[in-house]
Amino acid sequence: MKKTRQPILVIDSGIGGLTVLYNLVLQNPNCDYIYFADYVNSPYGDKSATFLRKKLIENIKTLNKKYSPQGVVLACNTATAVAVGVLRRVFPYDFIIGTEPAVMSAVNDNKKNILVLATPNTLKYNKLIAEQCHNDNINLEVLALPNLATYIEDNIDNLKLLKPIVQSYLSPFLPHIDSIVLGCTHYIYLKPMLREILSTDIKVYDGNVGVAKQTHRKTKSYKNGRIYVITNDARKGANLISAWNLLAKEGSIICAE
Image (spheres, rainbow, N blue to C red):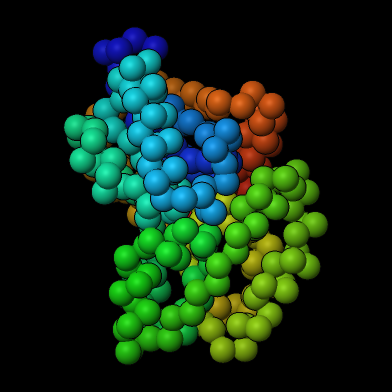
C-alpha cells in the first residue's frame, strides 16, 4: 500500500470486529481499511488489563510502521474498556475510536429494564456501565459471558448450534426485560437468532452504527477504497472468510439497527 493513502486500522481479537468493519464500509466505502485480528492473544475477555494494554501497544506499533494509518478503531468492547485511554496517550493519531455497549441508546429510547451481555473485562472496566448501574431511573442488569465469544468463533459456520446455550443464558431474564445491549462485537452475529428467541417487545442494541458514524466524521477518503484483512495466526484465516461471507449474506440483519 502506498503510504500516501492512509488507511483506517481496525483491531479486534478475532471475527467480532468484522461487524464494525462492515458498518464502516457501509458508512464510507471510499476509505482504505486494515483489519487486524489478534488471534495470538485472543480471547481478550478474560486477560489481565496489564497484558492487554501491552499487547495492544505492541501490535499498533508494528502495524503503524507498516501501514501508517490515519487513525485506529478498536472494534472490541473489551479493548476499549481496558485500554482506550492508554492508547490515546501513547499514539498521536488524529483519532482512536472505541466501541462501547450502547446502554445510552436504550436509555434514550426510554427502556427501563435493560440487560447488558458482555465479557468479564468489559463489565469490570467499562465506566458507562458502572455509572448506569447507579441510575435510579432504570433497572440495569449485567451478565458476564466469558466463553460466548469463543463459542461464536468456533461455530461461525453453524451458529444455530449455539441456540440452546443462548436460550439458557437469557431465559431467567426474559420475563422482566425490555431491551438487551450486546456488549461484545462477537455477539452481533447472533442477532438473527435473538430475533427468534426474543419477543418483539424486547429491542436489541449494539454500538456499531454509532462507531461507524463517528469514524466517518473524522476520516480522509480516497477513490476506490480497499479492504485488507490480516491476522497473526494464519490458521484462523478460514474463520475470517466465513464471518465476512456471513456478513455479505445477512449483513442488513446482523448489522443494521
